[in-house]
Length: 161
Image (cartoon, rainbow, N blue to C red; front, side):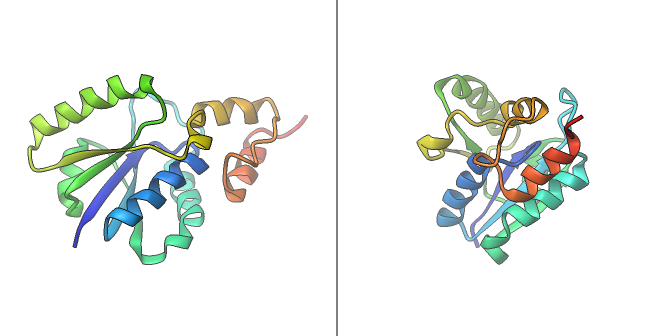
């Protein structure tokens, strides 16, 4: 079985993330979408909230997608879940430098784990979770960018006064 891990903070999950999952499902038998703890980020949603939103947002993929979380080295977690590769999404050229550096470091830490870069559909290249959070905080309609469960959760986090 070919298994891959797709890590991210997913704070919140967007249609761009889901597009990457869709592409990964076409290439691998199983995709483990892993919510990562990033000590340099202060998430809007708790780990539990992000996992629940992912489960609801990815339910169309049934048994080909598993959702989990981790805190630590990504390559170690990839080994623990039996993944052969790490999926990373590249939206624009500016993503490449950071992702390339991380891929090389992960290869150095564990040469048997490969990093695979996937590009989302061009309609999602400008999407990222930070932009979505900022728009939602200003009460902009983000329903075209995130699944309904995420849209509702954002409205609760940023209620109109």
